[in-house]
Amino acid sequence: MGFMPPEPPKLPPKAPTVNRPDGGQGAVVAERKTAKTKPPRMFQVVMLNDDYTPMEFVVMVLQQTFKRDLETATQIMLKIHHEGRGVCGVYSKDVAATKVELVLAAARRAGHPLQCIMEAA
Ligand code: TYC
Image 1 (tube, rainbow, N blue to C red):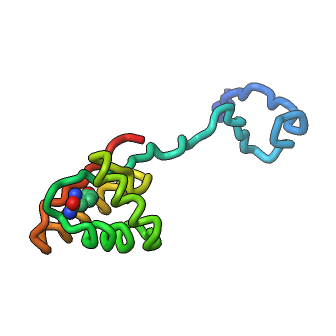
Image 2 (cartoon, rainbow, N blue to C red):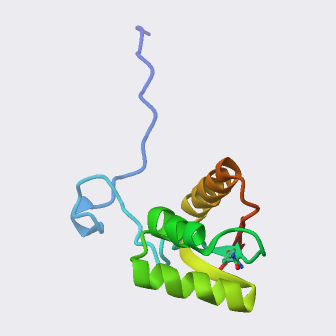
């Protein structure tokens, strides 16, 4: 008997491609049932009252760091002064943390004890 080359392995018969969800293009993309990305957790930057930081300094910080106009900044400052604390703004975690650092650095630099914290909104 002569040499016989080995038969190639038998593959299962191919299903008709035209009936596949992608129209036979080869890629099957599953539909996502739920949203892929959740909205980011938000954090409020809260400023605390003290007896020493000048009102004008707080208003200036609110204008510069939190982009408030003079009237809004004054209202927020007075709320903090009367109620002990007030929300300066609500931001993503990184932005809130940066704003807290900016406020504390400006206060330290000016020699004021102004305190500022972030909390989950
Ligand atoms: N209480 C301060 C004063 O009478 C003013 C002040 C307001 C300080 C808000 C801090 O976050 C603050 N000079």
